[in-house]
Image 1 (cartoon, rainbow, N blue to C red):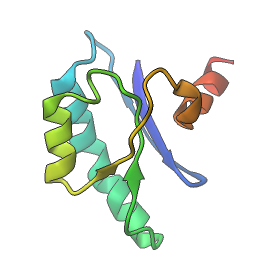
Image 2 (cartoon, rainbow, N blue to C red; image 1 turned 120 degrees about the horizontal axis):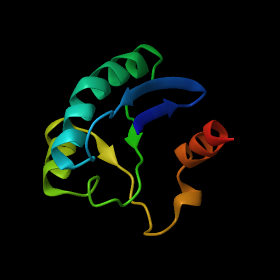
Image 3 (cartoon, one colour; image 1 turned 30 degrees about the vertical axis):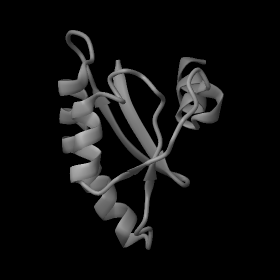
Length: 98
């Protein structure tokens, strides 16, 4: 399993989750290792007000993850439950599987 991101037409990071299952603690670790660099790169591109998009997985919506986003000044888009077609990263995953 991997965590990945992109912004605009820029590819972000892929972070491998090679062992065990994903949980809120591991998810926040991935955010800590990747999103500060992503924010710096976006700022250098003139993007100063990014909105983070993710699905409504329980890992993503955990108290720990919500607190991390709040503490790190990330706006998280509201995403309807069971609507993966509205999340652009799902198209990337589909392409990679293909």
